[in-house]
Length: 326
Image 1 (cartoon, rainbow, N blue to C red):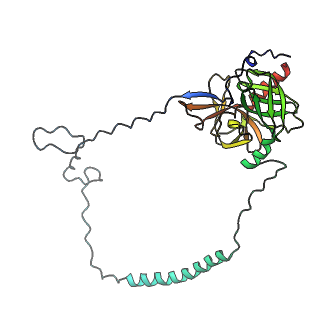
Image 2 (cartoon, one colour):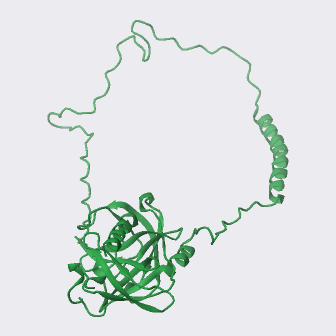
């Protein structure tokens, strides 16, 4: 059956190059101008000529017979006349002796306390144990869970990545499979199968490939709605044809507007390069939270740490519609 989607007809573009991701070229960053220096006020008064009025004027002298801090009309208090008193006994030696005695006493007590602490058994927190059967907490364990579900997509002279969502379907980017009705899927175990492109959504850049995946593990789909800025994530795919590559980073933003996409995108600093297109963005629990799709560049540069992924909540809805309409 010929696919009715006009995006999936035509000749492949490029020769031997991995497809995508889409590029958003931004201008060269411009350093902000330094702030203007504050004007310097001179406190000097000219010695010749008429002096300009100064912003710093001395306070007016107090009225005669009036002391600072006293109500008007009250005379200033007279200085107190010291009374004759016998000289005080010097306390320097007494104070020093007392300090030495107290220091010796407290020093012995403190030494005993510190010695007691040093002899007590050291309490060290036990490292967190990762339960591979229930969840993951590191990038390594998240990668181990995600890698069996990631495939390399070969569409003629183009190549990208994809993620298995069920026993017979792979989600990838539309710009990876555009112009192809069938593609080759290279599985994690090294085997390859032929898949049929069911359709693609141009605006969301999501496509679905149907194939007999031979019991390959499907990825666990998470929820992108709960992502938080700074949350660790990994990008899995085949950049430059290097199958099963993993890069790590964090979620940089959760509602970034990019290009002509109809909804917000996930921004990440996990490295995304040509060939990563269509691969999954995965959290540390091993669940797919996005489909890696685009990067921002400056001029003709490559990855600069600003990548974008279609949130999995939207990508899954688009994939379901494509499968239902095929």
